[in-house]
Image (cartoon, rainbow, N blue to C red; front, side, top):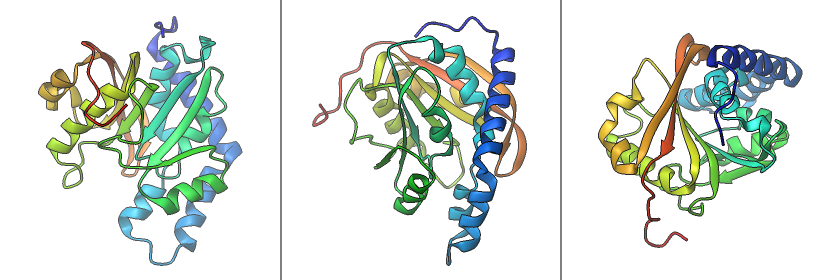
Length: 233
């Protein structure tokens, strides 16, 4: 995938517009609001995880557009880690240039909910080891909010970065979307061990579960080739 000709600012504005249009057409807020209201016994954390909307992923979409996703005829394979019901995947599955847009999560109810909302590809699996995936099988991999206190531990994140590098193609990209945290600085050593190098970062206003924040998508490419862990083909 080559660099997209558009400046990042233009890509971010276009990404915001495309996602807002999809969100209106899809009635994403109505769907998630009804799901939270109608699900008895849903925990506060589960409710927060359910309240994911397409517009939250404007920085990630801008990075995908900048990578030339719409311009390739190869058909890109995208995976969203911890995607819950896969709202961003449902947008991407119809984007020109995308062959696969899969949501991965350990919440079976969330993935089933996504399927009822026309999510085509869902994977029930662990987002850290990525043992369900073949080495070199993905072009684009998105992780978000990895640095959440008391959620992921640093050793888990480091292991996940290593696994991510292995499941990406040699020209694939890891996208890490965060707000209020410099992921490249905080996990510099783990990124270096995984052979991942920052290519760029895109920051702009996007919605989070805590309101509108300036959200950054860190874009990483592979450096030295990695060998898949034992037992993964």
